Length: 507
Image (cartoon, rainbow, N blue to C red):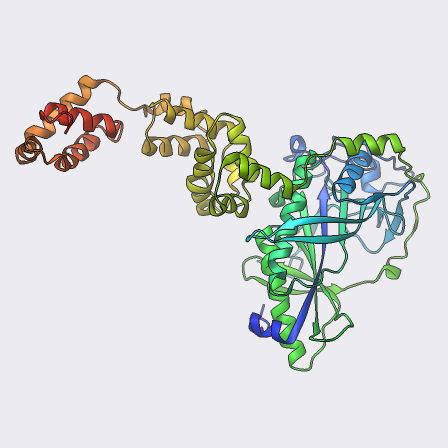
């Protein structure tokens, strides 16, 4: 794929105003699907099912099958709408959205069109420097997911060049809530960061509500990023593109930035933007054309005749409103104060997307400083090296248990890192890894004294310096002892014993 011509980002902003809009799909983690009794693969308990094992006649579009609405999905959708400060419709209904779906057997999607369950809301997001921006929400509507195609043959895994395609209906019918923003103006050069921060906020809300795993690497949370440019001073919006199914916060940021630069180069050369969907390529950091973007009329929406309108009671709405968790921005401010973190330390946790993990680790017994150190340090380093999410590697409870071993003096930092590697490798709990590998700090003074005496005997000049009061010379002996003990010694205790054996106590 040949790279498109790009304009320098700052130059693009001089000439054009970026306007973005974001459509985020949240997979709900209900036990069953939106319109059938089949198990829901978006629920972590069913995630690893073999293809076409989590299906029912409705999911495959078999003749005569009839949909029924998942009541828990309705409750989750209302909760999400309320968390986005939306109005909840007293009556909403489903519609059929028609176009060719190779992975939806009935060849239409049950969605909501002109009567969504939630509408006219807003949510605050916080940028990396603490700036608060309010994002206007147009609607949040319920729908079902499509299945999944696997293209076999060829070199890219895409349909181009494939010999044939396989259909997996497991995901067909998974309950979704699609959250659609209004056009977002005034973000200027921070438009890519705004998109990333908004997606992170939606993820935090979904997790705090308990309605979704919200794991982007699994597709629980996906974002379609709309970008358009208009010349400075113009009122009319430019033609937009929609980059589909971007599945990481970093990628959303990169995709928005790329589209601004690509569209600016086309417009500056006198060209026009095609209204279309585009594919994001993580490996190259580029977008490529998909299909011409349809307008609503092209989908031939009409009311779903097999489903009654959804009419939640006022009592249910107020019950769900009373159960809402605090908003992400308010929560962050509270946690920062509770943990006593400075701006840099706290923002490092937020930017790494590890706020929930650090909070859970503290709740499991670790100090805020220790929890932050592990998650943003060694765990993130390993995750980056392996191309995985930090939360996939280890649980907050395991991190807290590891820190407890450090606090108890069972492990030093070096040994703790080895234990962490064992836990990540699936060798068991931190204590089990310590026992299996024999990694505990040597606490037997007799063993330490023997190693110290050997080191002092091997370095008589160092011994003389220590006796003369040059206690900094003890470092050479300490290093030798730590090497002899294979790192399994408390350096502070070794220092005490070295000075004691050299007759320099209290020096």
